[in-house]
Image 1 (cartoon, rainbow, N blue to C red):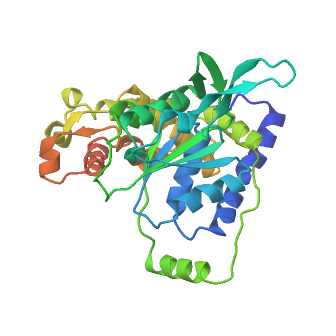
Image 2 (image 1 turned 120 degrees about the vertical axis):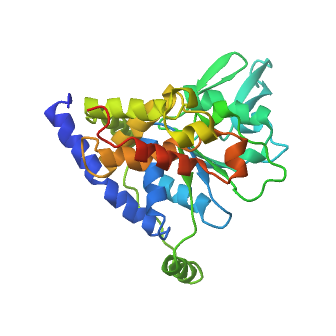
Length: 334
């Protein structure tokens, strides 16, 4: 690693505190360790994530608890069919200088100006409003009236969508889906975990996460993430993996049969950064094949467009990804 020894020592102390962050969140959230880990990975990699799960699984509480454990400003936006771009980004209002009497326009910042933003049920708002997030997600600025307004750092959007309710929804366009670093699926808790939740939430217990990281700490961890080592052979493997998702470039039968178009170059960048972030979360400074195999699913599942045959045969993108990983053993490229 290219960091100076003093910097490396400070960063190692930060990395050692990541398990403590998980413990603090566990004061409020029972189970869902992999989901929490993937959200932390998204944050360290400097991206955004799409979280899918049925109502009542504490998605909002999970994100809020995570923000408390990192002393980050948290805002929740409920996406509805009548939500307008200005309701998210902000708007200009006419103000008057009481001393001079002159009138001027003042930009009032919207809820997007927070460190951690929960975009709840993002697919319930029309494409025009969804598109308002694109610049914020990619450039981390908001442009209004020709003026650029930087968003706070660190900045993370966690968007949720419901897998059941389809009436009144607007599917996210491919360009916006690709902006999400990870597509995380939130499942039901185990029987014991659900019992623990029922006991914890219907009594007098009031858990609250203690602050583990500051915003500056997170920015330093984001810097360190990019310094994590990845072997050149693993880079070759990731490149082959991404290219294998494209029907016109793949020899894998499931891809040929079910994929209309595959992942773009951004998917490879996402997989590398997330693998580096996962290495840090696990207390390592080098990417392993396991990091890549684990994160291939949340990185690729929203970047594969399946055609009608897959829908007719009830084939999901995760099943195709499994076939790709089977066809390309991790030593590929060596």
